[in-house]
Length: 103
Image 1 (cartoon, helix red, strand yellow):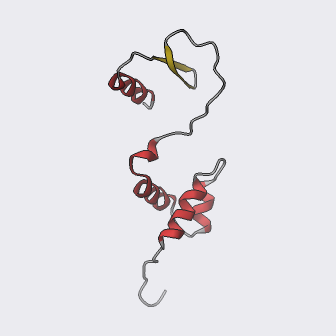
Image 2 (cartoon, rainbow, N blue to C red; image 1 turned 90 degrees about the vertical axis):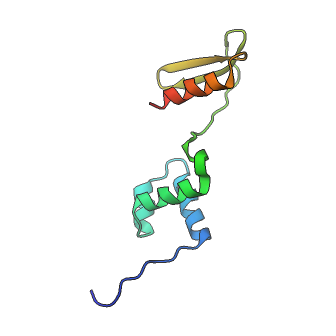
Image 3 (cartoon, rainbow, N blue to C red; image 1 turned 45 degrees about the vertical axis):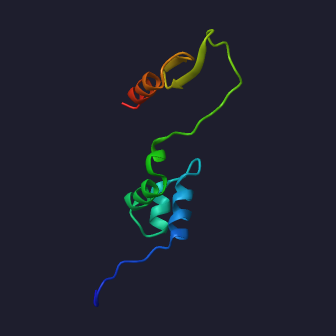
């Protein structure tokens, strides 16, 4: 190697294209990063910068209503866990319960 190694400058459009590519269903972050000659962590860092707090949200799938108990406003199924949140539950309580599912 000779000469001074310089950092590449990525345009916002290039960053957005890579972040969009990793967000596609079935996307392989390692392959996308390899093709761009980057480390996966760099693309994840750009995603956090672009999305802010929204980066932690998962895809939402809305299904036709099943037989939910009366008064139940939200049903969350995550693996084998099923959480039913009442329409009268406070937003603080609902947020705390959903945060606990991430752990």
